[in-house]
Image (cartoon, rainbow, N blue to C red; front, top):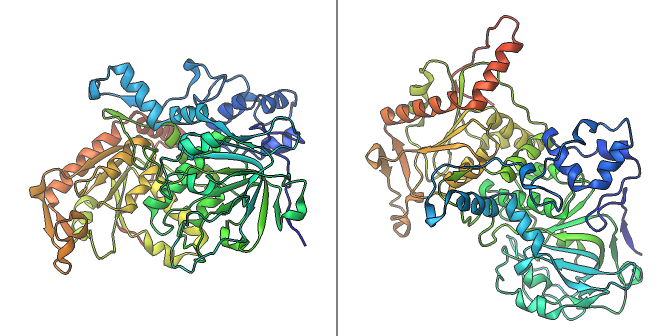
Length: 540
């Protein structure tokens, strides 16, 4: 008995989207308004179909030449850019060299580079229903058609955590009806760490003597619909898990499709159940429940159209282990990820008044606790035209149903002008701040990790630089961690805290986009009066 997962639409053939009905398909794009033109310009067949249909909802976008920069027909003058470089001379680069290097390593130039690297690891041009495997350098991303994966010999080990076993396939266990380029596979094996490439999983890709999609008797499970295979990072830590989502979004750009009629499979060779505090995020990418690989234990699967997503911890990737050029900030790619996520989750900006909205994150952990947070929030609640709240995002998990957690968090974050918190995963929320926002990292533990995340998001970042204004409460219970700043608790001098918050307020109020937003709010208010706010601890 064969198990079939049926495809409701035929999509993604050779990176092109085919529509059975223009109006129906275009209405399902579900993209932010400013992402429509780049999408149409990257899909000329869709653009043509829209032009030929007077009921197409995106006719106003068809004349725009806007593009992200990796498209074949994209001109330099039409590239959407959100970054700026304001300190030339770093790394002995000229201003132009600095700008170009930053765009190639922290923006859509990264996607363009990977797109140019795509090469066939397995190819058969003489057959209509051929199999194929294309990969970028180091096999960080691969795109395959009509492939076979035999999991009958895989021992899904009992484990409480994710597991990425090596050498799990025998010859012929993974492959397709195509000619393998053994040299390409061999020469791309320098990055073998589990979360840095797909080399260990695909190094044994074999030439088969059957076509997987034609010889269905060899397949216990046939997946006809477009499929994404990914290796998830830690699901209970926002900083780690959003490596998955950023790289998944990058992979969609390289693949050329943002359709949610896709199946996502977690590649994990353990029997563990994946614990995911942010599973609502997958609504951004798929309309279907995710599947763990161990659900196919003891079976062979055949996939018609699949890509292996950028893994979370690639060397010199975006977000993790970034080669981030000093003197620059912003990224059209990261801003697009933010906009795409907020759009699909239905999170909106509600600027009700001129009061600066400050959200201070309360960390309820055993380490890196701000011991005088109540005193700090009280000190800024007294400032004029300020709406300040102290919040523990983790309490949302216990007070709301799981599906609501991410949306509730992001709704608060996206309606925050200044985000304050000690060094920790909560500052990853800076990805979803408005463009004019400022992040105040109370103490950075001598790490630039969250400063870099704020930088690529394009928001200002401040921290308490005078160590005399930071009091350390060492963790003496574990001598082995005594010298590590991340394992202690802290208090911040109130006067210094207020000074930096005032600096952040001034930065926000002078930001051109904030000024424009407030001006537009005044115009839409009949009486010219703005709503007030509140101060104090936020009750959820």
